[in-house]
Length: 328
Picture 1: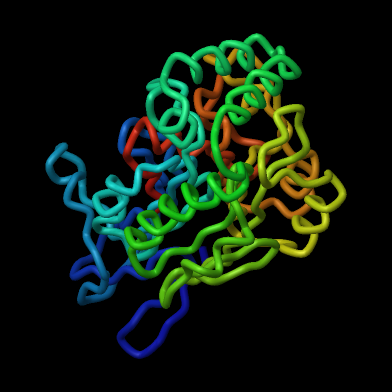
Picture 2: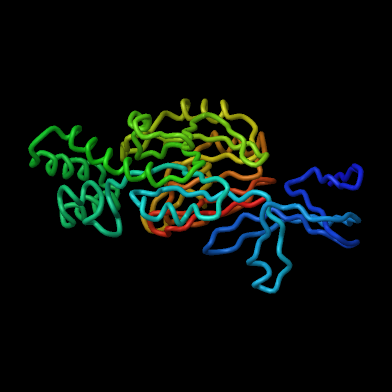
């Protein structure tokens, strides 16, 4: 890592600027971690002879655990698959310089508690449980027929009923977002409704980039076409065009994973979800530091490395209630 002299000051061209009051060694570390488990850390040791200390934040947990505390410049909390858990967002954002949400805000069906979500509210736990059983067994035509029979028993227009329920969930969700928040769409979201709920400090990005703490973040929202036909599924070509529009970034943020078997297999649902070949190609071609995503609620593997890129499923926020923490 290059070091250059200024009068009385050292400047490190890296993720952290550090000044220490004595001769010795300073370990510069960029350590992403999930609050529920730790991950690998990369560090570089640099000899220094300078005076003074500069940092926005000193990590205290290292000192509590008997390790030397690290100097942290920026802390970003990342969530995905919120599915109605607006109540947990304020705590998840606590201590973050920026907050990122990778989509799936709506809770249509709760696979753990069948009485919750839009479908549970309208039709009850038993009826929803039957639909979930058919989906889990990949009997999608029967699941759709069962769903149609349920909707046929309601008074009123189905689209109007769903939109009213979605709007109620979005109102609570967007009100709970901290500032700044950067978000993109999930496959169950309604992009046409987002403009009605955006406010200052809550930034929507899709096929676009932004800078956070000196790093370039790219965002690609939505999912790919599946037999489940969720609200925001798009063609592979359209999805690839958004990935190409983002280009080379430090951190690529998507709702769905790259097309890697270990990352797309859901161990509870017992099936492979759809991952993006375009994202996998971007990893090989542009080598971002991180690719962050969600979508697969119970992945076979939550994190792995592809070359220089760490791929991370940030977790099923609806179930966990905790964010993935990225620090540099």
